[in-house]
Length: 639
Image (cartoon, rainbow, N blue to C red):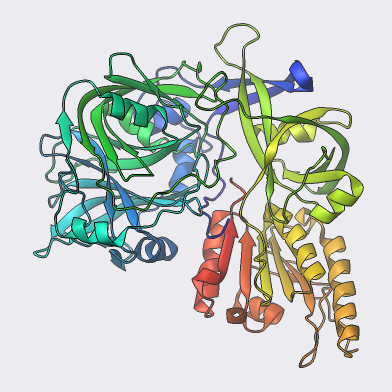
């Protein structure tokens, strides 16, 4: 997907053991996940994460997550907030100290940043009668989310100044990127006339404030929702000076799932929802552990209706009764605000549901997703810790180069009745070219051993066994309309979509260079194959152009003026120790290597996939070399 949100691969948050334990219906492997987690953790985010009660080892996620949560805004986040967003989701308190989730609206550019710890929000962006209250010293949680690309970044901040013109200045204290899981894609566009009315202070419709049960209109919105936003605060302080303890302020997060994943109690005052497997930062649940105050925001994406709820929430650690739940969260309503047409947007229906959405079995609102049994027909070792798995393609199976396949795994439900199972969902890039899959009747995924299910595939999946294929999806594909030269950047297992995209570019005769970064040479997958392909394609291009200048090391070729494009594969080992020749370089991808591959990168479309740190560094490098950010397309393997 273009400009996709991504996060460096976070370490597993829970000590886990996985064993193969048989076969269930339709040949689905049943996997027993024995997870060590304290039922009543001992305090805050760290305790919710690993139950360590402060006795952490160096491998606990409460230690390692400090590597991913930054005390400043990276340059890419600053650009994201200031140029790409027309909505900003907010977590804050009202004048009584109650917690609310809210949304601010403005044309891209309504948020600005003068430095790595600064954001400013233009006046006229807050919805009418929004309960959230901002004064200097207020804690403010912010979430930037581009639903079209599933890119999202969070910032937790303190309000430092409310300017005379109404501009709100924030000091960023915690920032983190989140993965694209459970986000439904929508194209959210502002209605210029309604935005102008908002900026004039017009309410735009009758509003309701209540401390009683929700009405049928509000309950219907919640029951049909596939998205909401959750605000929490790490302390119970009312607006005023920032809390003394670090990171004890407000936070806002996205929650998504299939329509109907939020359940409403019969009394109109209670809700509950499943907490799915995610990034394992537990910023929201950690806050709820020390302070149950919470705010929820539901949006009617067709009308712009906004429903804000404030109350308290508790974590039901052992409740896995809802499909896909790792635990459940139960909410008790104290107050609510309904503004039927407050958000100035054009209708924004769902374009694509997240492939990670669990199935709601038996739900009329979200019938169970169809899956197809696919037989494993081959397993091959590609590189150290990387295997390719081949599957017989079902009838009518098709996809585009760069897309992923989504699979369901039935696993034993911890703490449930004997024989009870739950469904886990995993996606891996399709590593075979669509034309090859169609011709040979088989498709492949290439998987790095990195987690529970990937480890099970490596250890247990054999030819003759079946997996349940949920479908294919993703928007990280080569642009059909462009014939500009292409630079492909791959970090680690991010080579999987690049392999297929490089093949696709050769078929289209689009100029292409692939830069592949690995830690050690033995971790490089597909390298001989890609090098040979680049060599043959460059020779064919040169011959067709009447240019017999040949090709240079690494499978590339150079062409003269007007000749067909060259294709190059250059690989670098960041651990060093590799001499030049045959495409190998030492060190990280730098400006010299980029120029060696493509000459002027500003003339290229760029596609990259890899760890978050790799892509952040590469994006900054390319922008410094004059590449337009709009021409940089990214995909995360954390999806």
